[in-house]
Length: 184
Image 1: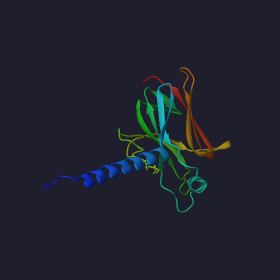
Image 2: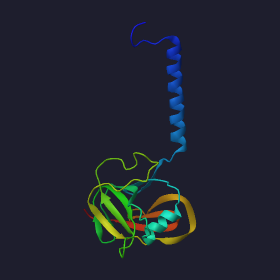
Image 3: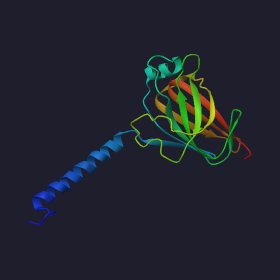
């Protein structure tokens, strides 16, 4: 037999192995977390519906030990110029980040500009914040949500040129951010 050639039994085993691997990969993709998208006028949010972890969120809010690492929970793509609070946001890609309370500093919500890499290369892992320039940062004041969500959920409601409201729901907590169109 020549080197590198397969016999019929070897070829059959190779084909079966490829089939089993393809089926396992398809099952993993179908059953694993997927990146979700929410679109509004001039913006898009991508996120993974991570399960609610009240213990982890309490550590974020209260600064409990061990303090969790900051979490890039969503990606915001802006096609136009918007204003969030007193900050003007240029078109581009931003990581939406929660940073836990540390000492006297409260938990914060941050938008950080970052390069074009995909935040959710592995959707089974809560990604750390990417390097980049902070475009917006403020205390994250979540309110109690009367309709708890079992997973992270981000929705966008746009109002025909008036702006968009981005609602972040995680468990029994909700944070609302209003983005209004701005001149470049």
